[in-house]
Structure formats: C-alpha cells, structure tokens
Length: 193
Image 1 (cartoon, rainbow, N blue to C red):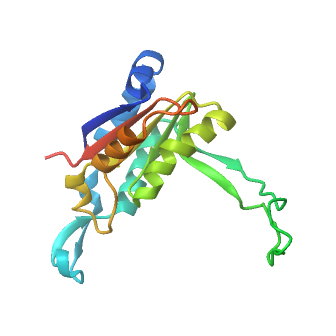
Image 2 (tube, rainbow, N blue to C red; image 1 turned 45 degrees about the vertical axis):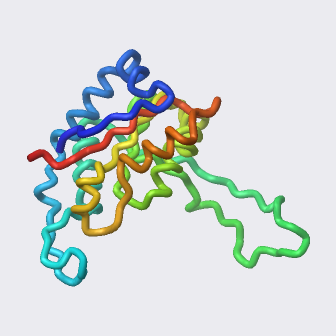
Image 3 (tube, helix red, strand yellow; image 1 turned 180 degrees about the horizontal axis):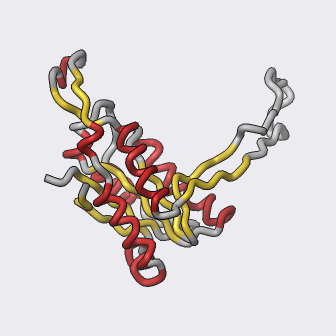
C-alpha cells in the first residue's frame, strides 16, 4: 500500500516529524508492508458491484495488525466505569452496571504515539480524532496520533461501505481545532499499482 494523502490536524505531521520521527518511519513502513493482494474477494450478490473483486476491510485490518505487531506496537485498553448518578428519578436501570468488559481501546500504541486504522463507518473516524485521541492523551499519555484511512478511490473498491480520507479532512477543516485536541496526522492510503 502507499501513502496517498496526508492531513496535519493541529500540527500532527510536524509534531511526529520533530518529536517522533522513528515512530512515523515505522508507521510508513507498515503501510508499505501491508499486503492488500491477500484481501481481495469476489462479490457477486451486490447489484452495484456485481462480479467485482473487492477488498475486505476486516482482512486489511488483520494485515495492519500483523505488521504493527511485528514492530512491537500493541493495542491498549482503558477500563471504563460508568456512573448511574445521571439517571433521572423516572428511570431505574434494568441491567446491572457490570463494568468488567467495559473499555476503550486504541489499535496501536508505542511510546507516546497512538495509531488508529479505520476501515469502518464515518462516525468512527471523527470519534477517533476528536474524542478518542484526547481520552488516550489524558489516560495513557500519548502526545500525538495517527489515523490511517482509505482514500476515496480505495473506499469504493471495498466490500462494505466505508468512509474515506477526503470526508474526514473536510470535516476537520470545517470544525477547526479545539484547545483539547492533540496533534494528529491523518494518512490516506491506496493500493500500490
């Protein structure tokens, strides 16, 4: 795969290049090493893409996980403890507030850099940059983040509807930067020709 686009949100590219250049180099190596050819499958039941060979988002995620793990990047979980103190007097929860399996997880962290690989729906991209990166900055100490997403030309070649680089860039440009945002580099990827 190749890096086809880069968007520096809140100085993300500059922060990575100056303070975490080795991490950025490894991230770009992972992108190059990801073997997208293993992730093609024929989709014949879908009318709009009948008979086309499409990329599986799950398989691409698995490829990225393998490549990041080979470079000693690991996922990181933060346990969640949900409060019941905000319910109104009109409501009593039916389910217990069991928190054993409640957590937020970042795909990959190494040192002070967090990485999310997103081949899913659009809302996850925005959440990753505008909320998750901030939470992991506060709870896990990351100082910069990277969001890896497909370019639109790749998104239309995927077996499920996924969001893409151009959408998140537009939204972040319209939203602007908040004082709680950490530096994040959005990387748009495409299959190498």
